[in-house]
Image (cartoon, rainbow over all chains, first blue to last red; front, side, top):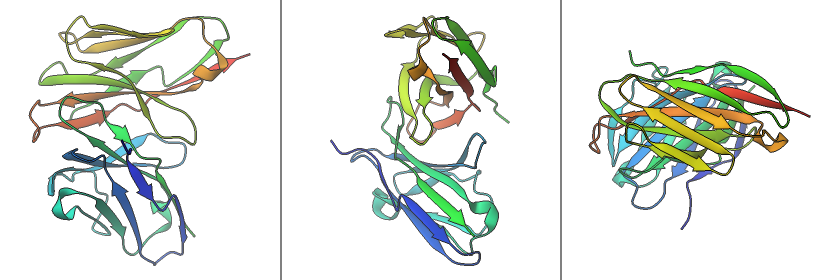
Length: 112
Length: 115
């Protein structure tokens, strides 16, 4: 069974540009989570999808971040326009009811 | 605001010694408690999923206990080895139905094993 996949694995963009991160959860997992880890700090919750619906987006830092999960399958996280403080590793995790969360390998975003 | 607290934040342990650290979580609306191991440059991997008060789980030299009434879980590592160096995250899952599930992570305990 394929795990959670994220791409790109690494993205370097200039301040002001747009970047879109993608997460493909494990098939059949209704719950999809986005997290961010800024260098040297703890993992921070961004948002939670249940199928295609945003269950909780309280962790989204500002309106430059837009997440979608059309059709309840893969999800995208767009940052527009990117700022320096957006640099970090963005993790996606998926989970079915009663199981642990399975994480992707993360996308390392560097804004220069 | 729901908080999941882990202590200590960082820990240095001599190789061969045993150690333990704590995760504290809200005692209400409990559904499950997870422990994850997070190595540098990798993604978190689940160690334990704990759901019942009094649960004790073990995987090799690592074990965990759960007290949902008082809201804490301990993770124990026996005979620490260099490969145990990692950040250990606990995650509190509240709710219980698919739509109510929310995973709240602690800040982690960074474990450094000294040779």
